[in-house]
Length: 362
Image (cartoon, rainbow, N blue to C red; front, top):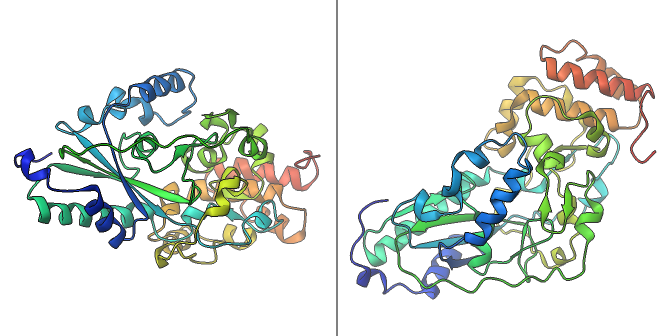
């Protein structure tokens, strides 16, 4: 964090100014959070001690810097938390779940890589602030460092953390990205959002792998988003049938959350679907070469999982699809894939195609 001017100059900035500038940049809202996350720190340490982070070793690597913004970025006094809606106004999403040969990609990943989009706009927000108050110390984060972004968003008043562990805004649901500016601005923090989940348990009931083990408690090791994106190597066989046709992430807990009836379609073209991935044919996707995968996912968050995991995920989805000649032929075409991981999942899928395993729900 760079050297900043006297706090008297910073005091001239108001929350109204910040929100106005943020909205001009395409953010739907902005709030201010303080840096005391002691209660969330205790929750995080318990979660890690239970091993619920799986292979995401970086969750523990930074120690308490994740829950102490001023330890992560010395000099931090306040955090600006922003949200940006991404819902693509997709009325077909629920009907695509477990829809035969059609794959399902998490709606957040259909367009441009959100890391880049939000980071650029947050940098412009920082520039706008500097123009008003002079140089100040800050760092931009968009799911790119050890930051408890959900807790900060809650404390900034942007929404509460729901039973599925996503942030929910009372008037906008949960289809939005979060980003942060850790700053040395001495701003007054907002009021934390109150919880409005009530007695609803829809997210717990619809989770295909029962990854939401209790209200507000997620075991990432069972979560389809973790299994298809973060998890390296072989997906546990017991969980493969429940993955269905979800080839990148999972939205079930959000799709069935009653609060998302208030979600508004995003006005930004950045989140518009690309390459037909809003309802892709699994057989067609499985025929992509690595070169095609890299070309078609350029600028997309999907690209970071790499061709091997992408192919592994599609193999599982094909194994869960209804048996038909095209599916069988697609799997057979990669029976001798160079990747040990892909070959193993192809063999599993082919066994299911031949009826050696029970079908989901059977």
